[in-house]
Image (tube, rainbow, N blue to C red; front, side, top):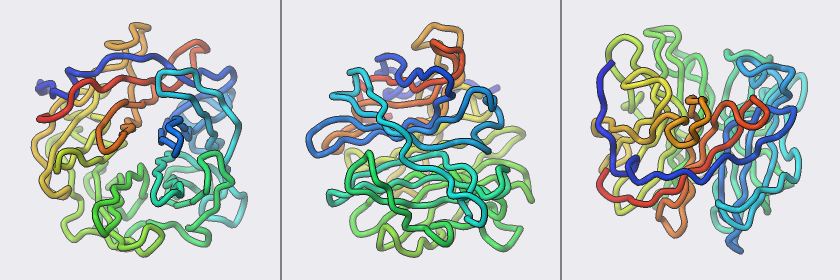
Length: 318
């Protein structure tokens, strides 16, 4: 395994602690957002403990809501806010991977849904609400907001998942993961662009915009943000340097990316509880500046999984 250089972003992270340790549930995909009053809301995936960790998210995941006075305050769970709709819908079985954004005083949530409880039908959807706790209304009602490509030679002809939005000037950039199962079998990152948040997303002609050559080198769970005029992509490493830490990449245009640096360490580097699986990084920004990093981490009080929060102390050159 190659050795990666730690980024300044990584070196500036310190632990706040675990959040959303819920008895009887696995918790994953913690997506934070500020409201107009400065409170922190989190939309997160959860599924019953008895369904198991490895497959339960494919068959029984729902999206719930929690709120706190700050990222370092206790979170109060208000309940389930979004679920699969049942037979006959593209997102009828599970809903997962929430990513939430406040734009023009409304909240928009991109998410993954499936229709049959398997990985093969994962697609990306979009919903909106006046408040983070809902009610949530589907914009992608009859079909996904981002579907697979019909040509099996395309890297995203099997699934689209792990959505991450960047509202950049007059366009909406939707970054996503696809599993190139029909070709080299690797997870890669793509980009689709629209002039309206609920409009048609056109896939970029240079897709996949992030891929790694060499056996077993792949990524997932990207979070994309812009700071100081530069673009940053923070994601889970799946074999580039490790399988439990994160990668950070920088770009001048959000399309062509520099070499990956270590974006965050393994989970037990921060929490010291023997659990080192960190996934689903989500950056909470205030006034365009990264403040906190939210992640999903195995283990915790009930031996299942929970959210985890790290404070971002330094940011600039990666």
